[in-house]
Amino acid sequence: MIEDVPSPIDLRLMRDAREWEQTVMSKRPWRVDFFARIRDEIGAAAPPVERVLELGSGPGFLAQHLLQTLGGISYGMLDFSAAMHQLARARLGDLARHVEFIERDFKQPDWHAKLGEFGCVVTLQAVHELRHKRHAPALHAQVRELLAPEGFYLVCDHYCGPGGMQNDRLYMSVDEQRQALSTAGFTRIVELLRKGGMVLHCASLD
Image (cartoon, rainbow, N blue to C red; front, side, top):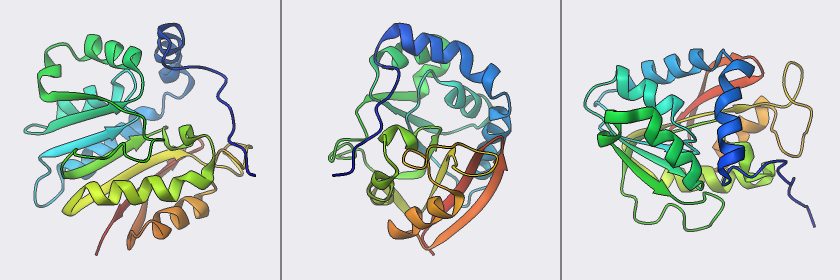
């Protein structure tokens, strides 16, 4: 039996959620480059994206950037942590009126039930929270079910290998990330940005 990799922290606890919030941008300041590329992809989409869903939305850094720079979108923030949602509400302030806060765990088989369709699903530094890379194709397949006919999936995570992470149970290589998306049924997979041990792919159906 293949065992999952236990997490050293519990992001459902306010203490751990707040510590993550306070350190993540200083540890990886290049996250803003991924924010910008995600914004550009959503902003250039045709037809225009109206609904965005973020998986593992955390304390709202990406949501804040997108809601401040893109007009006319409604935003779903899905996270298993009520503490993270609390931090996100504080960060977003008045922008929170455009947000649906969804407290669900994407490790559960029915997490995607009755959410409707989205023009874009995005996730940043969250896929490895499945706690083993073998779970990724199933998550991606569930995301595919949520996409509108011309929708797309922007998925960014750490990668394993030179310049990246060392744990090859938790993290996938870049090739494994592409293969996981292909196994999930996506037929067009494009690498958009690789930096600081993270890689962003856009996956869609041709």
